[in-house]
Image (cartoon, rainbow over all chains, first blue to last red; front, top):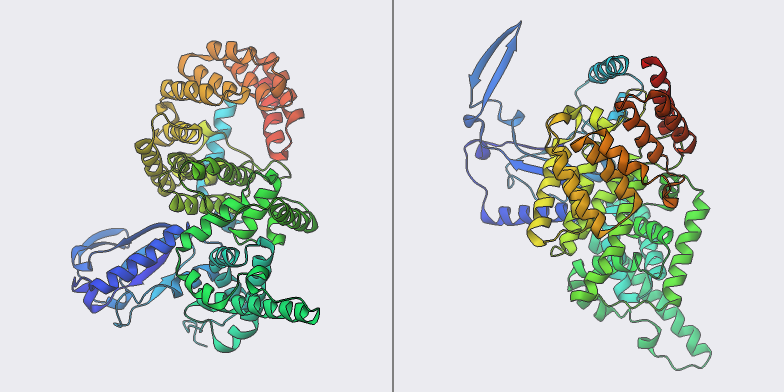
Length: 137
Length: 427
């Protein structure tokens, strides 16, 4: 997953200029053509978002906007690549998403079944139990 | 110690190889157009990689890696051309640049401006040329378009690297000897070449999806490589309905990858799978691709039909929601288009689900004498399944055991043996 960090402008809901849109369009096309892009979306500013906050068993809904701009995201992609190195190389090809406003792309690998190794995840455990029940019925 | 400190990313060999892999198909495609020789093009690309591995750790990875690699490879091509000419002059032969190699710098600049899509299409058509054996096409496609190394291909197919290397060398020789033309065909001629490409991609996917050898049930990376190739192909020939069908089929099948394996790595059959573990993003992509295939062509081709069948499963939120009558109808259409005992067997399963196990068993029994299915473990496996449903457990046990003795995959064999045993438990 590739996350685009928000900036003051993106949080203010200012749409990118035409040139950036065109550059981004070309980059997205490259990703699609290479079979790398699974999904990608731009996000509205946090003023249109909300949070559900969990504190000691209590749930509170808090409406946006949220103050910590640099920790917010303005968009994301899901890429299918063979390695972190490949993802980084694609990310380096991305046009500056916020036009010199000091944004960043953050790359985070999505968990794969292999990552769990031999350990069972709770859902796998539950599934096995269900299947066994079914077989013995 | 500052646990939160971030480190600048070093230009590692892996980073350079990753950058190269992204560029490699376009680079080789462009070079093939220039030098009209797949082997030479690949050699030149490799020389460019070697140069990048020397230079980039010092200079950093350039912004336009593609142009850097192409310029480097081009210079090597020109060097080679000059050497050729010097040898010729020494031997008193008149130099004729054009006839030795068309790799003239001016021509290259111009050629670079041409559509790179054409370069990729040319490369994929050459790699999947019908003059080559299936094995050769698979290896060459993964090498040239997937950007896999010989070692990676060998590992994926559980074969020695030397075997794959030989396949690729022989394939290139065959292409040269057969004087395979480098022009990209158009119209119907192009359409006629696409099935061979789709076949290769589907073979690669299936090799990953149902590992035919060894202890693993799946090799996910191979599936992902095939999916990427299919997505690349559909971008090159967006008017080919069946390619959309192939993409749909692969996305939908891949969407089940995570649910097909139990905790101990054992296979879980489709109807027993936890549908929450299906990849709903891939399902959405698959259904969208299927819609494009359907919009482009009626009647649908075999890949689109298989995708439509997979879509029936994908759309069912629980297994009991499956529209089996529609699946039977789709298998009817598939059997008409590509009649085969395997399709008939699948149709029989669908019939049993839509109209009851007795109706299915009748169809399966008609296939028992089929020579093509004699060593196909799924026939006794399906028969066993239907016999269980009809309460004929002793017969079912025999069928599962027979199926287990025929299965080539260790995981599949273990599953069948456990089903044979379960017949006793429930008797």
